Image (cartoon, rainbow, N blue to C red; front, side, top):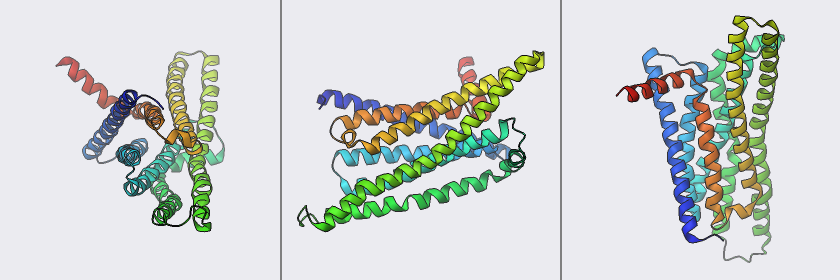
Length: 301
């Protein structure tokens, strides 16, 4: 147990992180939607980032509502809201992996015929890939929805002995099969993200080495651009991997879900999410340009 005053302090930190993520997500969606209204189109990267912004916004409100419902033992509200949280979380994993795949295909210097075909097709396929990510997430969430129904049934069967065969089987299903399903549902897009990032880093490092050997003015500028891309990619990799690991620990360690330490762990998770959202904002030239103009306007004022 930790002191009550420290628990309140951690809850305040968590709420500040949540508000930061909500503001970041709203800013991403507002800027990119304004761009879409002005030019009547969005780049593939901006389409993915807009979808991520909407998901982050929904996820964070669901996190706030489900966490307080859980903490104050409002079980029915928690079960229903947590379905929305899990759906948004799975969709964020798929969208982030889609972003990594897009960068891998468009930026990498591989000359394999498959890569060349994907490079030609992927930009126009992004809307369909977004729809596919949405459909996969909808299918993936079905076992979680079944689990919540089981939890409701368990709550209505409290008059039965705790060693009842039905109670034991339902509890085992909830604790083992569902958690394994969640790990697979998040692990597949994460492995796709990891593979795409690894391929892209290998390609960019190879390209930077080639530019160094040429040692020309154009090569130096190209090497600088690719080095910048590597740094941005490294930030995205570090914080998305950290987010995956925190979710993994949350699923496998029940102690983190109980008592005062629950809020400490939530504050850790969403500190990572906030930094991850910041790194995503740097992935869009449209966002960087809009924010730069805004900040310059504030400085001039």
